[in-house]
Length: 436
Ligand code: DLL
Image (cartoon, rainbow, N blue to C red):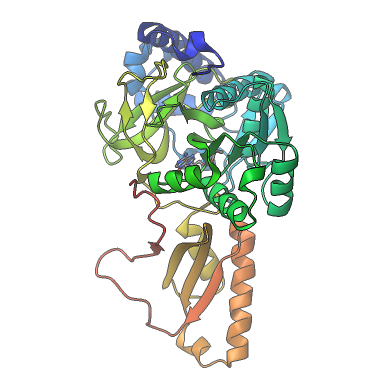
């Protein structure tokens, strides 16, 4: 049986959803124009005024926002409410320069948690369930979002946070967790550990909600089989709120976007032109109910397709497919957003030439990051011990920049293949977007 958190909204008619969107968009534009000088300037530069936005049909007239705008306006430049009305900050795992800081009023938190509650109920959670949340808690939105959603549903919530697999498994068995929330790679790791320790008979899990990174259908099958559960995808990003921007239902064929809060568009990433439904392009979101940190036409850089085909679950909100890639070079390694430019900045600051390669792989369902860096001829003549020290120094500097461990290998000058055109900076061996 399909469960809904807010059936009257989740299954509303298309006309009703459109009406909500138009009415809320007009209000949101007025709010932003009045309270966010940064965006007002963008609108003025494009010659658009709030009066030009009368319905969703006018959305395309508004200027885009990008991660660069968030960086330029850091930290308060896109805030639309007095700081004293805000009660929470969340942030992306990115670091200096790229860090996104999002603000929430109590109203914003409530709506975000309701979105997560919809996702949880779509995955079968009820007040009888025990929800084990092993997304990170803290600045990352995963833990707090699903935690809040679980409270709204009325489930018994286990705020485990990430890591400490022994303790996760002990609580899972002893307290009879029925719904698991974590990244798909951690779910696969837990599944393997359960299998190895022969705990399968002691777990009561029935479903899992896995997101924050790309995962394939093959990985879904593997997790479902090993844990004996139904595995649901969940998508979101800090800028827009966090997890629960969209979520899967029993059909498991894409994620319903909470259209009463977020308007989705697909654009051509080169030209910015809006593409018709069913075409593949970059996903863009406009928030229409947020108070503190509204995002107008925010370019996610996630490549995606939208579909409005009728869904057997009864929900009427548009569905997005699993993200199929990114239109920028951001990598997600161990759930942390990593830009090659951050790595390059560290290397240059430490006096290395910009000849490097970043290799991402996955072993035992855990991501590995390796940076191969060419030494200068002078460094190459150094003793082996000194080279090891240099590697250690780079490992520390990268850790400070990225927040995660990257293995560093200093290689002989001129060993990294030069290419004719763009340098191949990143080799991602994980085949994350191979959706078979
Ligand atoms: O990852 C929020 C989240 C937490 C989503 C827990 C789901 C569960 P950020 O750290 O800001 O927020 O990273 C957002 O992660 O633009 C996508 O590229 C990627 N991403 C998120 N969910 C998925 C997913 C959280 N289900 C960025 N599949 C997004 C593929 C995903 N990629």
